[in-house]
Amino acid sequence: MRVSEKWTKYDRVVEQLLEVSETAESIDTLIDERETLNDELMELRMKADHDSGIQIKEDPETKEIEQSTPSNVRLPKLEISKYNGDPHDWQRFHEEFSNSIHTNKNLSTIEKFSYLRSLLIGNAAAAIEGLPLNVANYDAAMTILSDSFGRKEIIIEKHMKQLQNFPTVTS
Image (cartoon, rainbow, N blue to C red; front, side):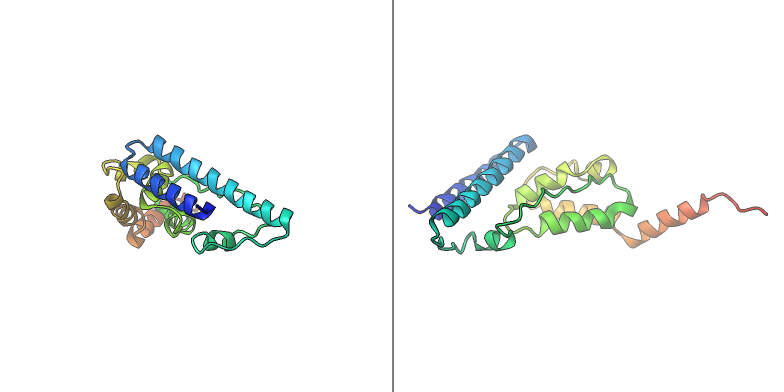
């Protein structure tokens, strides 16, 4: 069995475990282990390629990952700031989350939902706290957050309140 076949089999097992995991902590552990193993696999492939001078045949399943990360650059992990429900910060948070997590095809829906929950605090966390961690609720959580904190009317209202609270200018 080729390494890529074993990786695919492992990935399927992790997906199944993520679907039945009940705590965010166990899901985070599985996600971390998967990322660590993926990094180790990539390092082994690069080392084998470099040491032997032989090009390793690219797997269609890992092609996207290999092409998205140049072998000579080691990027730091992206840090997404936690979101507390302030409408002023919604656009920033939404863009960071969408670019890093939501559009990442290598993450399952459960993993995306787990990351989303881990990045919410205060009113934002309270807005979706009643949703169980499952595939069906990820889209619902995104909609709730967008409707609660991302509507233009809410942002405009918040700006207007801030303008009204500025001290009066006297001459």
